Length: 312
Image: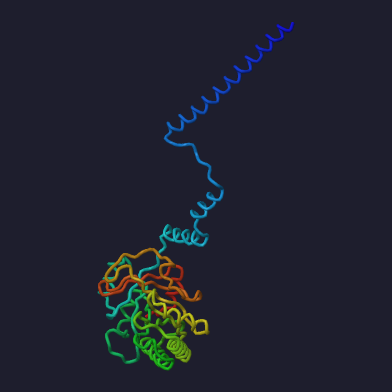
């Protein structure tokens, strides 16, 4: 009996050893197979990466919400292809041949034409004269009045008051029956920044002169996109209650000459520091193209803007 038991025990032990050996061989084969597959695919077994590292990588890839929103807004603007109506301004008096040249270039009649006003009785051909009215009227083009005394706009309140009065008188002389709203843009070039005192005097005088003759003159400003001192002066005066109905921004697609009109983009034409209450109404995107400068109306304000320009 003892011998039989011993024999059975040996058999059992041998079976267990065989089973263990078989299992070990299987595991080794599986490991080898996985390595072979990894080598075949040209990759190595993945390394363990700490949660910290993964989080850092995600943060680095993810833009801020503000930037993301700006990117989406700009992308939508570009995708929609929104454009305002083409318009013009010139140093030369408006003639039918000048308008025809603009029509040929734009493929449409300009919606407004910008011309200069200084004081009554000024005979310079650079200033607007009543003789230009019939041709603008025949073509259904609105007049954008520009008060032009470029080298004085950094001056005193008294000087602004005098120029505002002169500009208003010059506009009324050209349009004796003018009434209602009429925007007048102060010409501010980058070489001569606007001062707070001058704008205060000019805007108040313009409004007062119009009010005494049944005209609602609306002070506005023309200036370069990067003219930071000008926009700061305007912002400070608007904060003090001095009115500004809107701005006309110069930012050129080419330094000089003709350029094709681009889609409207608020971010491209809105200067830093411009008060949120003051809209950008037009964009001058090229200058000296066949004797005219090229402009685009802001499509978001176009109807209201054109209605406040002068109908010759």
